[in-house]
Length: 376
Image (cartoon, rainbow, N blue to C red; front, top):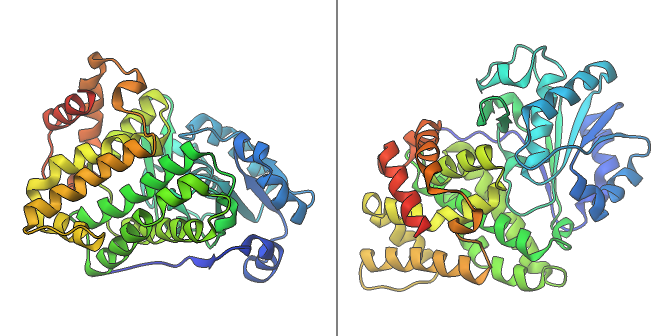
């Protein structure tokens, strides 16, 4: 059993105010650049950071499901600028983009050439992650997910050198998130925790983190949804749950929910958290026969009492489905994806690297059944 977590983590309300000290003492950076998106730029969060780093070069063109052509274009500029640190500010997309750019700043070639594990020759630049949503987990993982625009396929770029050097997780940075983002990213974090717990590579250590994350997230996401700005305790529990869910899935794996959501995200640009939130209860229902005891543990750890494991497991799945409705998560039909596309999605999901980690074996035909059930 192995557990690896090299990230130096600063967690707590107001930690962002220590940014300049962290850059000087921990990272010793002289030429940092910052990667973010237009939403963060418009929210006022970017201004908070740039006021502490006057003159920093900002790249704010990262889109949801970051695209390979965007990454390659920015990388060409970075090789001219020669930065010594990449800062990622935002949700999962800017953080994944930042990891990819830290890699390309020191390695020649397009990002497509680095799909897979440890394909880099030179160590990536140090990377500082500053998450601004409660769902990414990328601040403590070693993976960057980038959409190959030619293949319409989400690539996983992996390697222990892709872990952030430092992460600043400040719950106050999510206090202005819209309700829809709290819902989708909160359930994204829940998906990370539940899938880490159910996945085949799970260990005692990842199970411990995953169970704690499930308890934290389910105990706070609705309170955060209804009053994120004033409920500091809910913000802290949700962000902490998201981070330790990253500890868990970063050292085990995700399962079929991500296989489907990454396929749909690549093909139709559906936000990752939304896709995970839609398919979580449907994949849980499929996986139930393979891991009744683990489902029952999840159920009892989150407060449900039942006379036997089968009933406890069903209560947990029903709770997730009901929670999705209360948080206003859309249903599969809302994505306006035609049924004629289901076979393509099913085949891509089957080919996903995490398919083998699912606790119950899945062929393309099984993914097709899940899609049909979700559509109904």
